[in-house]
Picture 1 (cartoon, rainbow, N blue to C red):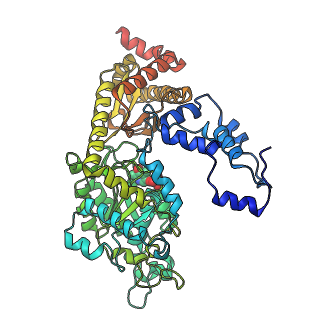
Picture 2 (picture 1 turned 180 degrees about the vertical axis):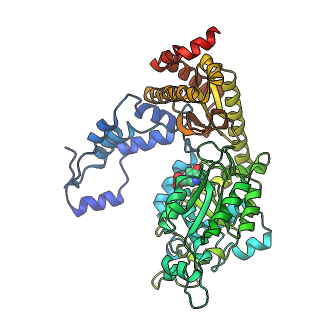
Picture 3 (picture 1 turned 120 degrees about the vertical axis):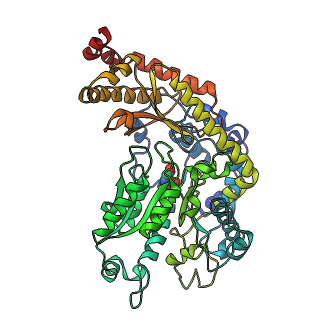
Amino acid sequence: MGEAQVSLKHLFRVFTKPEHKDSKLAQIEEHLSDNILDFLSQHVVTKKTSLEEVEQDFADAVVPESPEFVSTHAENLLEKLVAHSVNTYSPTFIGHMTSALPYFHLSLAKLLVGLNQNLVKIETSKAFTPLERQVLGMMHNLVYEQDEPFYTQYLHSARHALGAFCSGGTVANITALWVARNKCLGPDGQFAGVARAGLASAYRHYGINNLGVLCSKRGHYSLSKAVDVLGIGRDNLVTLPCPEQVLDPELALKKGREYQEQGNRLLSIIGIGGTTETGHVDPLDELADVAKELGCWFHVDAAWGGATLFSKSYRGILKGIERADSVTIDAHKQMYVPMGAGMALFKNPEDANAVRHHAQYILREGSKDLGATTLEGSRNGMAMMVYSSLHIIGRRGYELLINQSIEKAKKYAAMIDALPDFELVTAPTLSILTYRVCPAKIQQCLSALPQKDAKKLNSQVDRLVVNVQKLQREAGKSFVSRTRLESPEYGAYPITVFRVVLANPLTNTRDLKAILEEQHAIAARNLVWQQLMANSQCEALHQA
Ligand SMILES: *Cc1c(COP(=O)(O)O)cnc(C)c1O
């Protein structure tokens, strides 16, 4: 069934002929273009299907022998893949950093794939390379605000790079630390530099035991991947506790000094411009001072929060970011670009030369090929999506989007505060907040109980939160994520919380109200709620 002929004639047809208007794939395309919300609501089923059941559809590890007709294949995709996808456009799915996209991206995606340019070298991306350089320049300007002559000099200079465009925040963080590492352990007299001689020789030459990176406990796990691939080692990612939710500059200075005094070299301090879990922003300006004091690189991971710079009202929260040697920003988060768009920006346009590679057949010296300073090789023209968004939405459009997300988060926090059976755990700095469900009676009880008993009770509340989050997700109408974190009001142990990212511009107050109502209804029906209410210690306190 659905098997096509094995012939070059058939394959040439597949390469050259568009799908017939009535074919399944053409219908999918039309439906998507017409009304993606309707397409998703029709084809993404919310019906409970276990992961194991879905795996059954992808169980065969043999390459299909014969070609399949495109239409037959499209049917299969709808049934097996689309049906069990997640409806990221739904305004009641407020648990992730990637959500609904502006419509024009669907058509742009087609143009992007149609052109299939390769940004690794200019021969296959004559216009895309200058475009990508311009995008990096615009984002550099957003962060560093240099004057016009600066950008005239460096934007298209073959010997400089204002940043590296890459697939996302992870690769951007790796790239930034790669540059920092190669500069920190660079060529020196007879020593060829770490890039050529390797880490062991570099440590010997510079007389150090280890190279280290310092950040708060809330650092994204991509940082731990970065120190791993760069050979620095995960044990040398020094993560500091942040009871006040952000990295304490004094503690950073103290720990940095201690690390250096042990015969190590501190590679970089990392400030987070909006943590993934709570959206808090480290005191970047003060951390820049600390980095200066310690004589190390200063990197800011603003993968998620960087877009706040578009907002005149809120960009002050990131004050000090302009002092960072490198900054990570993801366009596929708060810039509403499809996934695959990250950037590492460099304050000093010379810095990227620390990782420059040349090859004879490609990336010749003096060429403007971006591939010479990017970690990735073949790369598509995702920069076009950022370019178009920057034009179609504009600085002021992004400002509105950022402002409304932050204001919505504040409103949601106020709604939570007003409900007796909910507790706001971390208030929003930007548009992320965390909270939990906890019966009012138990909240009172918790504040009166001694530490040890409170801890036990809190772990029971944790179970309630986990149950509610799971049951809500399984019901399929709405989605919030969850995490575990420490917060000063709850003692020195982590508690489980709901985590909300107000990313989707289409989410409104009614959606938020519905999500809270659903959570309350699920919680009140849950066995753990009954167990909490029957807690004898709380009963006794209640009677007294
Ligand atoms: C999302 C995120 C990353 C990782 O970015 P990817 O695009 O998922 O690779 C890194 N740091 C922070 C703070 C993030 O929020």
